[in-house]
Figure (tube, rainbow, N blue to C red):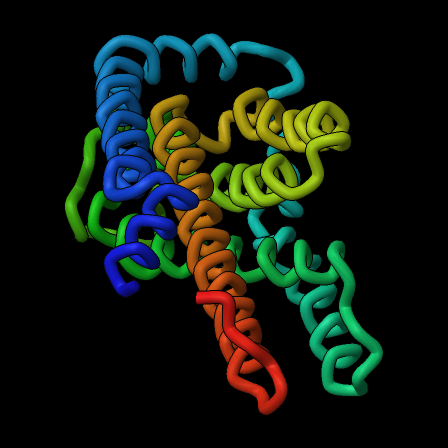
Length: 239
């Protein structure tokens, strides 16, 4: 019976091969990110930053608003509202779950980026490059000026990744809305192109990780409820 149950689960879940597919897909995506980041770093970053620097609106797009973690603030407030509703027993709904996932994904991406990656790579921002002529990685020399990876890109892509997977009818609208701040980051010379590529991958990975853990926990809870119902007196298990 145990063997039959295991075989049945493997058929439903696709077995070990299906479990390995996401790992292979992310390793492939990571390799592609490394290639694109390296290509941008060596061949595109400086020339593109200089091109943007010559545009008349580059300075105007360097608004102080972009120096604040806007998405963390917005979805942090939304997460607080959802948490209060849950504590009051009012329910959160599907969109409420989406907000929780977005808040967790954005927070995870921000923590990894600000506490680990930016201090590690320590790359000057484009406006520092124009002042000093250096755009290489400093490796933990001055964490206050670090540009790599882009935290804004990580947050934006984390939001898009969650919504892209949970609200498919809104994909085009949200992709368009979130493409606007990404474009402003480029046109305002806040980051080099390679910063945005790496930040985007970080955001997508953090969001996918949070959703995978959420889905695994939801599936485990569902199996636990079904198992409890099967063991109740008067019920006959079909297994």
